[in-house]
Image 1 (cartoon, rainbow, N blue to C red):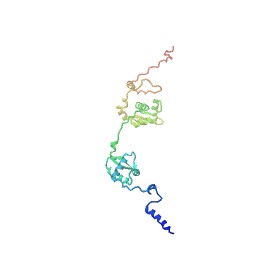
Image 2: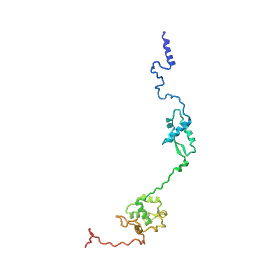
Image 3: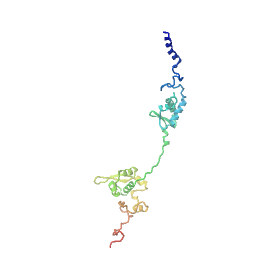
Image 4: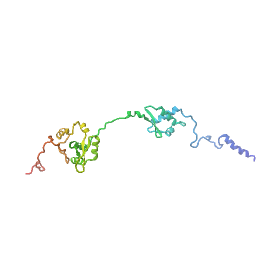
Length: 254
């Protein structure tokens, strides 16, 4: 009966001492706390310092950052939302502004100054061989239908070739031919004449002029079709009569 008070006093001693007598390591109760335990109570940095931190992170980041991204790198107790709000007010009316992109933030050029970053480049596009041949046929044989173009070229013309010439503004659709099926015709435009310095399609150079300028091969192409001369073209020499063919060694048959 006399030992009961001693047992009652043991818990009081442990409660007043703040440590378990069985704990002989001397480390105290704070070491080995579970995650989520209160962190040491250090005061957060001043708001102007937090604003500089946010400014540095947003400036160096290649992608917009959210408040969670900023808070993960800032000291404990910092307020990234307030720092962002102050930073947005500071950059109002400047050449670079802090914009909200969804739930994130990023520096962007002021919209009224976007013209300073625009560049204009002149892209030179060369016509393909098919487009050049089609344009020449239309210029010399206008109005020409697709079937007539294909007959002169000897191959089928793709729709993209004519579309490219129409997009350039050098060819337009003319009247429909009064033949079965009423096919559409193609003619050159005034933009084509202006580009090549011509008053009309009649000022196009003849075959002799093209050969003299080296723009046309005087030898007929194998399997190809030469441009038909325009009516009354005096530059085209009459064809020579056919001569008897020789044998393999160039000797005529007797």
